[in-house]
Length: 139
Image (cartoon, rainbow, N blue to C red; front, side):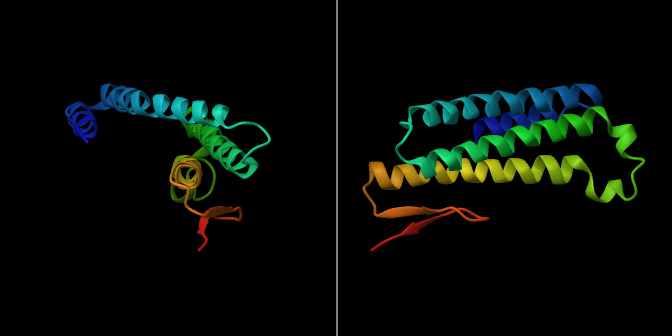
């Protein structure tokens, strides 16, 4: 919470390119270590065990990776993309970056919670792998 407050104040006190750089630098300072920790966790899950968990985490990483590609495409091809009809209503940043990072973060967090519930706390749970993956609790 303190970091979020610091980042908000630091970024809001600037304008233009400095604000853009400040925001993305401070965001990446949280984002990249968090992704590295989830990747480390994924690699620690033995292959052949908990395949649904590995699939879920892998899907989360793919969604996040595609989100970054979509964001960079939007950033670098903005002038070209704005010529498309209605682009200001459906732009890649809004629907690509925000939607895909949300899906990626959701699936990665769901995987971490599933692991914690099942293997750490020994709660009888399973993963339901559908359009919206979820944890199912068993009695």
